[in-house]
Image 1 (cartoon, rainbow, N blue to C red):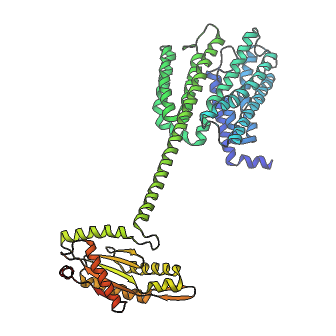
Image 2: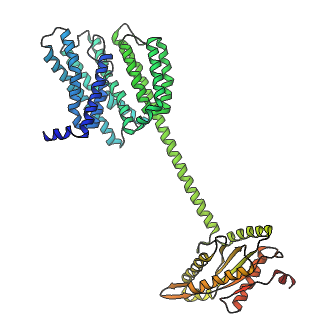
Image 3: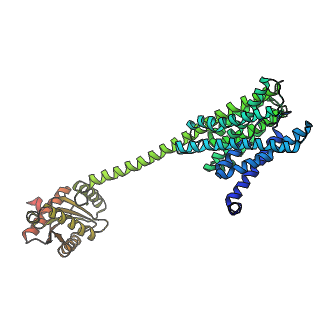
Length: 504
């Protein structure tokens, strides 16, 4: 009792009663507008699909709701039928007859829901995601539950004389219509449910509304004005399958199935035949192939869209990876692998561009050639690993002290070059001394519990009009750097003018 009260006050109860109302509403509409004349069943029983939804949403809790809903729908129908036939005890008999199909409908819903869950367990995704899901959906979820339950129900109806016996062939036709009616109910409602669960239905209703209105108009005209106008619905359905996929197709098929059933029940449209059973078999022969084709087209389009999105994602990912690889390759081409500063080739490129700019706009430009003092001793005494750490430490200090416009690079071995655009010789001397002092004060490499201290010698050269090339400028800086070493190292020396070298 306590559990029942807890359920009735839970959000799940609200959902259950709402789904029950939908179940009853759709069932009453089927009875009102799609009931076969002189028969005891509807052409298309959409409540079968609603029963599947109740079971999928509520689990075992859905069983009493499907049972109650089916009993409520069936009991008045049987009461009216039995009362009209003048049978005694029509009311209690109709209640019994209402509970029996309710139990069968519930069993049918349980079978369909179990098949749905089995599919998820086997393929790890809900049905109706890809075209490959369709054979299982059509056979195991739609047809087999309806075949088993409606065959049993038809036998009960025949044995109770609720359906008069008009010959074996006629009764087989009636049983076929019962099976197809429930199959169609699941066939139409289940894709709507799948689209609702995926969130696609909410996104589709509004943009697809003009297409749905067009289908209403065309099918209505096909039944009222001229039957061949029904053919015009095919291209509209095709467009819906392409643009709105399963979500749009499921609603479109609901409209077509509903209007076609109602129109045929009221003896209009292209499916009429002198034999009433053949009329509705004609209807089913039109609706099912149409639905099967649209299901396949819609899911194929869904698959194509997913493949395109996946392809675009892979292209974007590979493009990003290629860009990163190109960036890395560019870094490898332009960067010294050990120290991380620009390499000789990159520095020469930058220097050539800077010289061209300086000559064009008459701007000063200077370069510094830097060499680590006694670097060979570091390698000999402490090993090449210590030497590598020394080179990295020098680069760290120099790059910290430079301007954004300056360009620092490893020239080779323990030699480094520095480009100073817009810098006169005097300013370059100041910059060189600043670097020299920074290295002298800050450079301290700890290696195997030993402190390694270094100093640098710097040669400064300023670009002159008489410098024929960068090589000439570098040569003068190199001469100045060797002069600094000869003068005792840890010094900055200024290069002689290029005119001096020309005259000598």
